[in-house]
Image 1 (cartoon, rainbow, N blue to C red):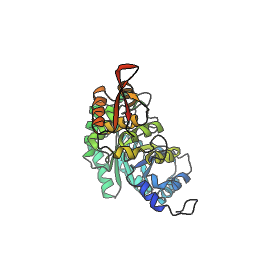
Image 2: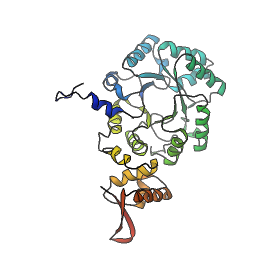
Image 3: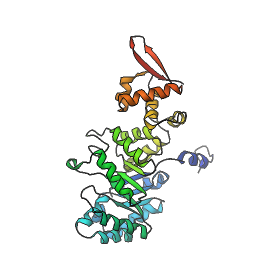
Length: 325
């Protein structure tokens, strides 16, 4: 490929896309697929959301799946599809329909109903025997049924027994009031950190439909974090944030590479770097971290000579921090 100056930029493209996380895009069957062709490098797989596979005839569904796969992108069912099949006593029929329609990813979820281990095992074994990629989702959709953090970790542990390619953390299409998100869509960092620490970056995918959430998760965990429920309109935005091609994450890789600390400490470093001067209280508010965690991060960053501490001349009791450039 050449840019508008006529120079070959293929080597630059390879460098940019190395080491970025996986991206799952939600398909509501309401858009043409031209954007996927244009940005296929940055999409791992597309999920035909919810139970939408029931709403279209078999030929139209198969043709849409074939078109997506022709771009080198995988295709998954929405978890509600198999939940519906299970409730109707037609789980195995539903699995066969997914395979015959051309899906190459199978998602098993319990967002609306609980699927017993026996039936989840049937679905997992079907995926394995048919060379389909198994994805398992953890979390409840209804507000009254939300899991606690400990229950979420337990459910992740159960899902890992089936050796899925990925564990998805429920975020719904709104990103509000579910799992790691509060009612306003703010990230509950204690939850997010606990989940990522338990699973590791490679095995977990966090649904993050809001662009603000995508930016914050990238800043916290780096460009390798796997993100799902991305809208068609947000593919380019997410890719540019991962690649530090926008102001929010510009030069992110540079300063994160300088320090091999925890995700929390790197997040504190990023906030300080993008502030002229900031005090401890403001850092706590900006990061959502506990006072103890922020204090520990500040000590590590000061020891590494990445930040400096000064006394506020207007209030000698107040310490302010700035990035060492």
